[in-house]
Length: 555
Image (cartoon, rainbow, N blue to C red; front, side, top):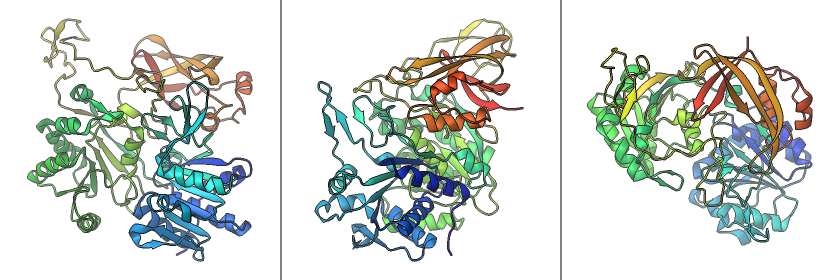
């Protein structure tokens, strides 16, 4: 059956084709479920219909390579495609279009032919192009399997075009993979974001199902002693915490309370021992579950996945297997029991449950890891930008969380008496205090997954707008919005930092279209002359010493 691209896919393709004329390195952001392979399959077809050229598509896993070839043949049955993947047993570089493995081609650099256009799937895996020497600004290329292939091909044809495709255009410990919002001294391949497809747009058009659910409160209390390795929680220490009885029981109880009746559930675990411990706890509660991980033979993993799709297993307890390249559209419950500091990992985990399927209306998120609060909504996650080369400091509007002990006392909100953190009820006025135990309580997200209970509603009544220069030296704007908080009986201020001239221009123009609902400005100078017609209401959230705007509410 021939597959035709959807309107939002056609829009992305048209933008890329237009920018290919003048821009060498392009980047497409498209969330899981956007049909990335359909987009670049249709793109390849339109290019080959117009030009006599050779195209290489790079992927890093066997399943992504085989899926890409299969999907290309569905979009274009006569596509002149060959495969170069040693693990499949085929290394054929003769096709006008080659879908190749990074591992296979990096070992065959001297066999690579000339290509006019290269597409890199999962482009967040692409290392920076290089770095600048601190003293004299000398450019030093960075060695990696991806870079060795691309640099070799550029040596054949310096004008070769490169397109990166990813759902998450950022890397932990680096920042964004485009523009200047990245680790100091590094040089990204992509000067800007060419086109972005948002999760909200896919939900609104019916290409993805909406998500809603419940998020754990106070999980950070259990994590404050977990050390960090490579920018994320140390796996062994994290597993020890999340394998405690209290967290295993909380996972079972969360499913029984909120998710029972859902048959296709995936939990993302810390490591194999954690997954096995959770499997034992689920099974003892009468819930069919199976851990799936890298130590199982490939054939066994295939059998487990097949059983899951047949409905014979309720819960897949995954350890690093189902992050990329796996799709089961029936999946309608995602349980996060693996805290992470990496926003890309969080978004990839959630994305596994959003694909559409006949009869499926939504995806339930049970986040017992605090990832939603840690990173925010998948369309606008908090991405930490290192301030310096050692990555000890971050530029994200807030400082990295300190490892400090919990206070030994707390104050009752009602009568102001001070009591111990262990008290659940105030001994003076019987007010129920927020529990300070390690028990992860759950609060509900709204249906669209954008507003949490801790968000507060406020009325926007004034703003100031001025030029602003960031610590990284980028010229942008600072817009400080005054908001009346009825429940607090006071005015607060929240600032945003738009940029209609730099690398973030595409994202901010899309923001303007959605929030202001008028034609967006084409530069920061033009934005300073415009009327900013904010909606009347917004939700805000206290984030350390700052207030952050969550959702703009029209009407």
